[in-house]
Image 1 (cartoon, chains in turn green, brown):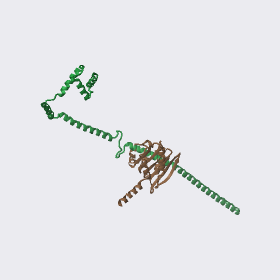
Image 2 (cartoon, chains in turn brown, yellow):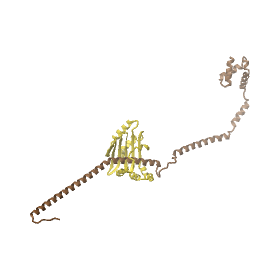
Image 3 (cartoon, chains in turn orange, green):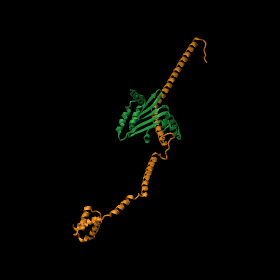
Image 4 (tube, chains in turn brown, yellow):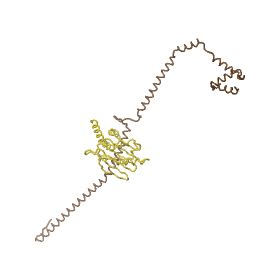
Length: 200
Length: 171
């Protein structure tokens, strides 16, 4: 193995970037008798590590540790903390639910309902305005349409009055005619009579 | 058999009570571009309460008119980018069969046409329908209930509003 390659692998090893085959390759080289003396320190380190790997725990000690682990009672603090997590989670969920529900159902502060109905004051006022406008439109168009009829009615009245005047005129003429006839009759009587008839 | 007869009877009853404009209102009521207004009897009953603070004879006259009404419905479509939509709606509006209605008069002015139609029950007018055709707008106003045309005619004198230009400002 070339020293440059060993240096690169060692650098990777210290950075924790080596793979297991690379580590095995490095270990095999450093622990081999042909390893370059400049890597003596690394060779010692790898030697210790290899030795440590081979060491095993005495059976009695291993059993004791295992037993202690099995019989250790759960820490009450951790158990209660778990419970508080549940309680806190439920409380937070309820808080969010009620906040959303209240904000959903709560009306704006400046809105109030008309007594005994489901309409707000603003809705009722808008309805009044719309009704007013719609009826005003209907009314205006109705007036516009019926106005000529009223004028026709006025014209008819004038015609009637004219006709009445005509009838009056005819009556006056008839009276005049009758008066003329009466006057002629009186003249005739006067001619026939020796006495003069005076009419006051 | 009995069930079929009942269905027929119910269908007949529904058809009798439904005004021809109901179909138009249902069809176009929720569509974009249409201004729809539906004011119910319940809202009319609130008029006195809402207008009690308002001064003037016009509010008194208005109260008098609306007390006998069942509802007012307005459906209007303004000419927008889609002028084809207005043409189609105008054609459908003018083609609606109004067999129970009789025409009172049509007011034409400056390209605007307003047709007055009434539906009567005996001597009483049950529905007043105005079919409005304007160059840039079309639609109808339907007023249902106990309608007193004389009182409505007086309204325009007491109010200073003679158009519908502000209707679309309120949704």
